[in-house]
Length: 324
Image (cartoon, rainbow, N blue to C red; front, side, top):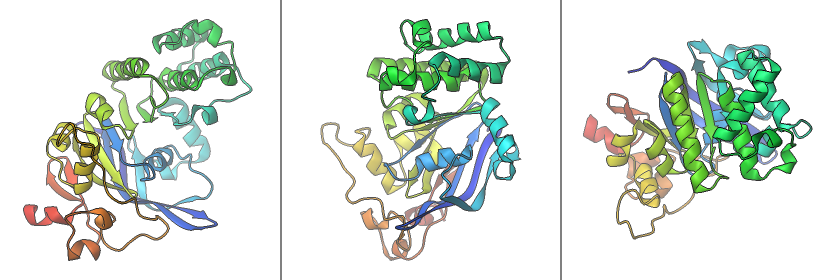
């Protein structure tokens, strides 16, 4: 197994709101090896973006980490000062935000923002940074890239702003790239082009990738491993080929059917029910209210991760009897 660049251990995060305490993450375990690509999948509201933001310590003020550890490059992220975290974000971890409008500074030109990122991370002179920034934008399918660098974020379309965000993230040549739905606003042609560029960069620089997405097809195309999240927990983890070929958790099976990757190809599938209210979590397995295979133990006790093979884990009582 490759050296671990990121390790999340039993992470619990709550948000205090006027409607009550939201239990956003409920004991997350996750590992990303050096040079590995890991897909993080699950329904909207399951905690994927919260996990990504917690790794770079950019959570909202209402959030509180109540338990757990985040280890990046053999150092504890949660023990770092704000200045140390800014240095880590400048040089070692890049984050592609889901909403580029909120991430780009509206009062600075696109070129200024890309040049600043290049100069901070790679110590380039301004002229060199301008050329490199223009080249990056061109590689991401932006025509007349030098003209775009003279524009402000509000002058660009949503898809163009998303590509600018990706350019800024890739300009650092980070150890770890966290990409939160990086191609959601892009057409299929540009999406394929960007995913190919990210994959090529990984091969050339040994960069690790944590790809946050709801698209199982993209995970199959880009990632080596997959972590399936549900209600703030990673309930299945393993090699993409193993998980997609033989899913062990009922929720994973449901996601793959919804994505039309298993089962009858012409039949539209869905998972009955919804994610539980994170302010009032049910006892036992959090998926049990929706699970067609539940039995009494599922509704009484929450399962821990069972390691069924090297690098493969599942949090499901059904597996206890098969393994034990």
